[in-house]
Each structure stands twice: as C-alpha cells, then as structure tokens.
Image (tube, rainbow, N blue to C red; front, top):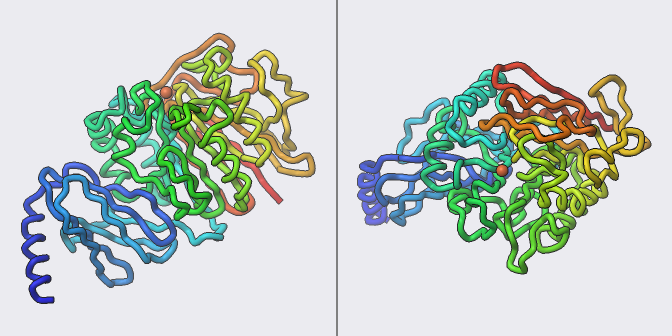
Length: 419
Ligand SMILES: [Fe+2]
C-alpha cells in the first residue's frame, strides 16, 4: 500500500510538469456522473480532485496520455462539485453541477448555439451576450447545433475557434451535449473520420436517460423535464443510409427513442433544418427537403415541442405546425397551423393537440443570408441581420424560448404551456 502511494506521488510529481493546453471540459453529464476531459502538452497520468460538502475526493488514471478523460462516478444529482486537475487549489469558476435526478421537473435553463466556431467578432459578441444575460442564472446545459468549428472541423480549428474562445467563461463548468454539422465532417459523411468524435464523449448507453443509441452520432438525454434528442444530419450509416432517407439505423433509433419518452417536453436538435430560406434553401436543397418529407412526420407523431437546427446563418421561427411537407409556397396557415394562443407568442396545448415549432439558429458566429422567398410563409419571426443564440427555460408546465441577439436584445420570445 505504501509502495503504491509512493508510486502515485512520483507519478503526480511528474504530472505537475505538464501544461494543460485544452480544457478542462465536461462531457456526458448525468445525474450521478461526469467525464472530465483535458489535454496536456506531454503524456502524463490523469488526476482530478473534486469536492462537495467539504470532502475532497480523487479520480486517477495512471496511463500516460495527452488527451485525458476521467470519469467521476457515484455523484449526487443536481449537486455542485468543485474540481481541479492535479491540484487541490479549487477556484470559483471550475465546477460541475450534475444533472437533475431523473423525474425532476424543476426549471432548467439550456443554451442552444449553432454555426459558431468561425473566429469572428460576432462569435465573441454572441458569447458575451449570453454571459451577460445569464449572469445570476447560468445555463445548466449547452446544446450545439453543428458547424461547431470552421472550416473543416480539424482538431486545430476546434482549438482556435472553440476551446480558445469558450474555455474560461463556459467550457470548464457547462456540460455540452453536441451535434455535428457538415463543416465538422469536412463535407463528408463517414463518422470514423471527423476529430469531433475524438474530442467529445456522448452518453450513448442510456446513462443520461433515453434509449441507448450505441452510436456517438446520435443520442438522447433526460435533463429535468426535457427530453433532449441530438441527431446527425451528415452521417451515413454502415448500410449507406442517412437520417433524411427516413429509414436506417439513426431513423429507427429516433422512432423508438421518441416512442419511449415519458417526459413532458421534447427538444430535437441537429444541423440541417427542414424549413429555411436564410443562407440555405429548404425548397431546393435535397437533404433539407428530404428531411422535411421523411422525418418531420415522426416529430408530429411523437409530439415534439421544438425542433432546432443551424446551417442557415439566420434566425427563423415557425408557427406550431402540422402536415406541411411541401415547398414554402404550399404553406397555408388555415391548414397547417395548430395553436391555441392566449396572446401573440403565448401558446397553450389544448384539446386540438399541438404543432411542432421549428427554429433555425445558425447565427452563433456566422451571420447573414437570404434566399428567394425569405422570410418563409411559415415563419412567425426572422432575423438575418444580427447574430444570436437561444435560451430555453423549461419547467413541468411552461416552455419559454428567448432568442438573445449579440447586442443583448431579446429579439424573439415565445411560451408554450401544457395543462
Ligand atoms: Fe452547415
């Protein structure tokens, strides 16, 4: 035992010489666990100290590596743990709050960000707007809508345009549940290639709730009252099928996952939107068109509340709608809108059931674009002039979405209420 301790100390002393060059960042956060990731400049052992209620614990992996992944297990739900790498010098901004206990319907705050990692001034302005807006009520979780690192999702692009930007303000204490975009795939469709899958660890065994997917591309998370479903519009599975084909491994998993959900709210997120006339056109781009025709019926069947995507570098928010599979010109509000409004942007789910609200928010860094027909007939509100990102505040009966512009203005907002 003493020998083991001495060996550990020697290992640790050596580890102290290494510099952290990426992270730490938090992955696969569940009510009872978190994976802490970081990168060092030389291969060393991994040591995390973490503290709750005054008690300091350690998690160790003696393998010498550059990319470190340490899993903290047996944590308490909805509990804040300070943590630190190779040191007991805890700081105020390095912590993890575990996910709410399964079944909890207390309010949660989720930040959705798309098409952000381009190194632009707008990217930083969007980040700053959320830091300011959420001061005093920080997000609990962070969902990514794809095109996270421009231009080709390379590891060095993730470093420069993601880690170097968000590390201090967010990455060290905000759990990320990402999804990839076409730029993360460098325009290809083979999931064995993108660095994205090496950088992130998704909860694919059902450990965060939802149906196990056993595929890093797509997975679900039960976060308080919200069932979060992350999909991959780029990946071609081993049988050659993509999500937009309306069949294949991802589609079948999605169907089963949505059917099994018991939480009051469902948010599905992915990269390429089924309705957009911003920098992309869902009437003419076949992947978007096919997604709308083949996958949207599932969203309606299983009462998805919000579908949020990126790709188009604008903000577009639709009516709650059903049965609109055609091109923009075929939208008819009298036929396709399903909503009982108590006042504008205040929706109540009543006896008529509910529609699906589609939001495009690919302006977390990139901004602008307009295709013929913008704004769409199905849009309630659009903005292609300024960047922004989405804050969701959700409890058992109320779902509130706000679009926070990079100048801090709340550009759009709606509420859905359920009995
Ligand atoms: Fe994209």
